[in-house]
Length: 311
Image (cartoon, rainbow, N blue to C red; front, side):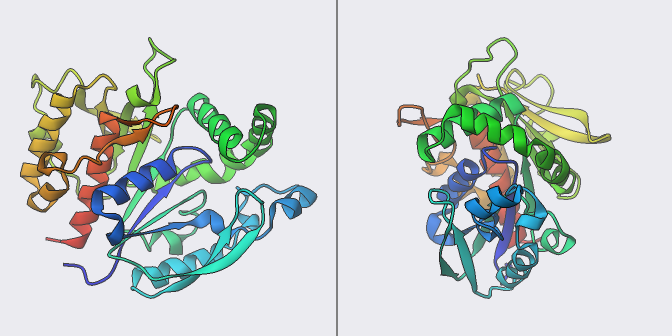
């Protein structure tokens, strides 16, 4: 077993779903075993200063990348850090927080893979890449409900940030071990977040479970869960495609097969009584379960445990 914390990165543009995924994985593993860090706390300038300078929070020059890199190196070796805190409500900074790493450290944010030193600190790197139409809807919903913006203000902010998104955020996709794209089906663009499909790009930078054994052609799962060969950024990759209409029994069957392949994963599967996998909060505050999200969380958890228990 690894005697240092296992560090996982979850990177993506603003409102790509990073916090939802991070929170769900922490619930699966047990929040007492997980330390969560947000690299967006390392902004160099507050909201007023950024407006005066005409620089966005997505620009590397607006963030202390050197301190992020230093703190990741410390966390990886089990050492504590004094982490800054950016207040998204006020646009300013609160008092820094003393953080001591737990068994698992999840690092989420906009620029987490920006430097070689940062990338070398992770055991698992995930990138979230929802279609821009869906991300826009998520950002409008979040920023109008939780951050006090109007819809027009959110859309204008996204327009101004588009250059930096294209220049600095999306290129980080190339460094990820897994790329998760949640998206609505073409025949129902108004699907709820509960019914989103997901494509999981599984790059050969990590030893993924032998899904070809778990998902043989013609199996009962093939109507909703498939292993496909596609191209991503010009390179051939395996893609696990999960449909939003996958039934509870189909997902349980995949969990059953995956957990039987990986003995130390078993206690984290819903089959063993963990009901937190795939939980999302609906638009009216109710707790729902997304089966594509459940499988995504399970595969990320698999790699975290694999790093903790290297063969």
